Length: 416
Ligand code: EPZ
Image 1 (cartoon, rainbow, N blue to C red):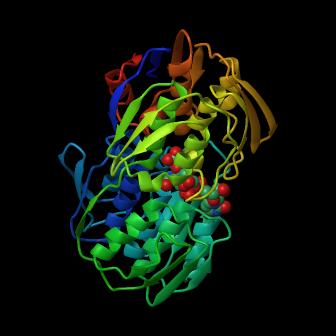
Image 2: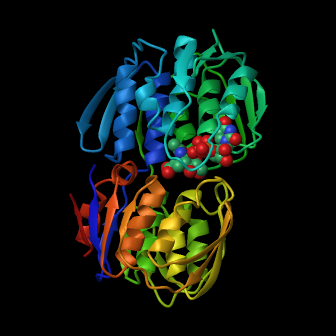
Image 3: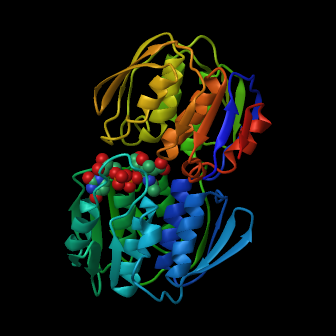
């Protein structure tokens, strides 16, 4: 099990480049299984989750070719099984994104309850209700779900919980269903709009993606296409918070500021000076004062940036309330932060108060999931002394070669 050794408190400066969005690349890979012609995806982050999903696609019979660094060609003209490999599916929640394409192409799909980050219960009832609404039959046998649908038909469906992968899955299912589908209370994340833009470029008829109301008119088949993965807003936001929390001037390049309005607003309120340009943001920290944040579906404050922002609040003057509304288990990681010296009080699983500024001290920590892992990494860079971060596979799931990119801006970090 690899680990990072970090000596914190070093001066950081320079430029850090943002990679393609993990949660965009993953859904486009899945969407390519709807199509029997080749699909080329570029600007793909070379991370564990993208490699795992491509492995899964190959196991299903999809042909995957790595054209060059960050660019892949996928050809799914002879899918040979409807079973999603349980061993891989248990390690990555995004495996659920394969259910719609397999159901559409093969009329059947079998899969385990998806695994991934342990941040909350993460049900899949919205997926199952949606498929049933479109005429599928759903069975749950010996811990495997089995869904059967000769041909899905268009429907009207209202999500009772906003889910990004749920929205993406029903959009994919409806793209080749018979008739018209109207989805309501959809996720509005940029990755949903990016998926619709890609599918429309392949001949789909999707309108309203990026808003709570999406209409899809089913077509008979889709042609191949190309897609450039959008910049990873969570990676960009993590680096902005890193600069502010460690009080260093850093330029974040190849990002899309328009996807980060909520974070930009919170950082400005916290006293951070930001120079926002077309696809880069310069962070010039001044004195940090505490602010309250409440995570919310897009365009609200992203739950995936809650962990990094908590670290910033340990370095801010005053008291900040963090209200994590999406997941009931996503604040547990702050227990370890307290052992590094943070002054945190948990009112309930969804609400903590962080008082600052406090000096953080390096220590040995374990990454429980992707974003908490990044939180610990930022805390270690703020802390005086040496930290050991274990289980860095979790960080590698979402951040490509993170220690090399941090070393380039002056961090004292090495992987062993
Ligand atoms: C996406 O997951 C992201 N993953 C997550 O990023 C992100 O945290 C999340 O959106 C919220 O922004 C991908 O895109 C691959 P959910 P999503 O777990 O929307 C409820 C990361 O680190 N729900 O499905 O698929 C659920 O309980 C990951 O990159 C249902 O009730 O998230 C939760 O409250 C972590 N029924 C909310 O919706 C369902 O059937 C979001 O849930 C599905 C979900």
